[in-house]
Amino acid sequence: MSDMGGGVVRQVLGELLQTVFRKVYYVIGAGLVAVTGAFGGLDAVPQPPAAGEPVAVGEVVDCGRWTVAVTDVKTFTQLGDLHLKQDGNRWLVAIAKVTVTADRSMDNLYAMLRLPGTKGLTTVEPDRIILARDGNLIRRLHPSMTERVAFVWEQAGTEQAPTSLPVGVLCETHEDDPDPGMPEYVADTEPTAAVTVPVVAGATK
Image (cartoon, rainbow, N blue to C red; front, side):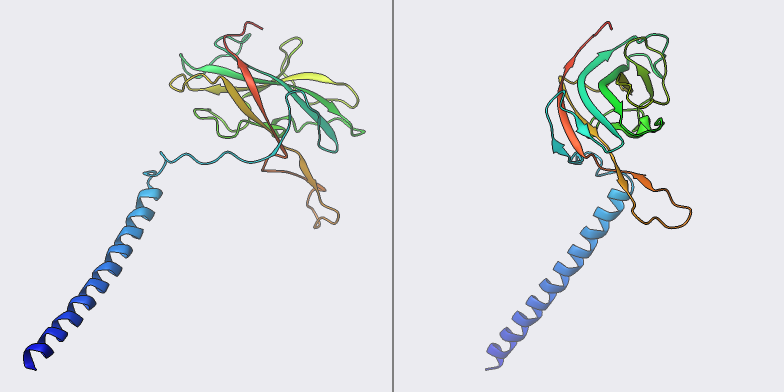
């Protein structure tokens, strides 16, 4: 009986120790994951691109006070008098037809398009916004004047040149009863629509 009792005690102690070790292991593992993530150790895990209602190339997206239709994406190594931040980088240019349907000019062009999930961009917002017809920088658009607008990003040359590119169209949210001092319209942070566009590489214009 003493041998049997001792065996039971050893079994119970063994199971207790295993349970304690498992808990300690999970706590240490969770701590390592948190520390590794804080120092960028998990950056290799790609994050999913922001979602948006899929639309076709050239399809008009109605944002209320303006409309956007993404028509082209091109890459350039030289683009007018614009200078790349680093030799070997490239320009990614998304071209869209933009029409202001509001009764006043709009100066929020930098908030209209994003390239979700695209690696190697030097900025989240476009680096430049230019008129496709003459290459001039543009900061605002006027009502009822459709323009082909080029939204320009710089991409690191260490990234492979894309063959197609997801372009996110961001709209805005209208606040029916904004707090005092707050805007009536608030720019969205997630795309309303997303269009995947074939890329014309090495374009000249």
